[in-house]
Length: 159
Image 1 (cartoon, rainbow, N blue to C red):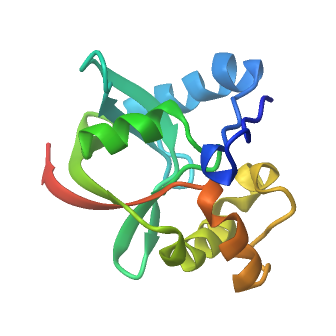
Image 2: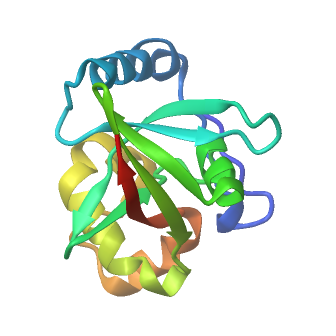
């Protein structure tokens, strides 16, 4: 796992290991294509910021108080950079997908989302949070917020 922290927490990136890239991600994406979701996982489709080609990655959307969020537990990933540039994407499960627009939260708005995300997905992504968990203080969650991009998504269409 490589970590980039040369310019602070906002530049944080944890690359997926070989097993995740070669085995786990293809399995989760394949299941999503078949319409099988593991605890709500979906396939994120977003256009590449330089090529315009559609890129895919498995994600764990979080529904909180009637709003859906995408959290990047690995930090400044390619999907995060692409979603920032495109401002929209698709969440797929089976043959159906939701088209959405995305707005990135500032660090002050992330605390409740990060806590809920860790409650829902901590068993899977907790290792990326360096000892911070759903029971951590608001202050501690606020301290790490810059390293975890969070997007609020609004569905604009279903297909």
